[in-house]
Image: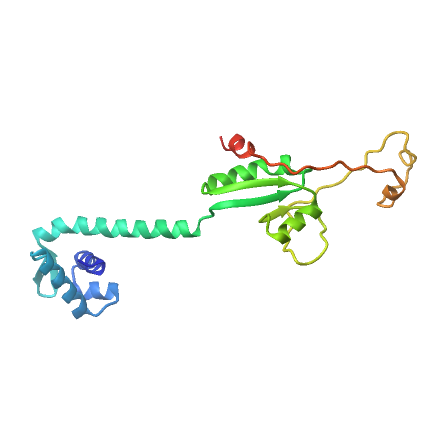
Amino acid sequence: MEVHQLRYFCAVSETGSFTRAAEREQVAQPSLSQQIMKLEEELGVRLFDRLGRTVRLTGFGQVFLPRARAILGELKAAKDEVAERQSAVAGPVNIGVIPTIAPYFLPLPLALFARKYPQATINVAEDITARLMDRLRSGQIDLAILAMPLRGHDLETFNLRTERLFAIPGWTWTFAAASRPVTWAWPSAMPMTTGSVSPRTYPTIVPKYSA
């Protein structure tokens, strides 16, 4: 018993005609009729009564029809599931992000991603932009959320969002009371300090926000 024989059988039963069934299945009518006859021979019963140009199901055909449809339905479902698995995101997804935005930007997108792609394992690491770019180039991470602009043109980038920056000086700073606008030139004359960043992961983010 072949799948195309079941398909032809269902087509004939639904159209009530070998000719219309052949047109629907895009095969020659003699070929379709021959396959129906082979199916009947294998089952040992007549599935259709031929009444001139029309046909109708026999009692055996009426019993066989829902079974044939069920088999074809299961085959289609199996093909669809395999195709879905092939296109699904699975396995580890390594994301790098600068620490200044990781706790605020990532929780909700990660939770939605985990819900949509349960076969994927998300690994998040924090680091500064320069080191994250090195990780991208070496293949240690798959994507990164960085501070723009970036040096070089070897990475594909796009803007997620734009944020305003504010300078909040102490009252003892000389330009605090000045009426002129603060420009990017002032940091060069000021003592600056930056905090060290240790790469971390977020093992509790997704479970917390997915609940």
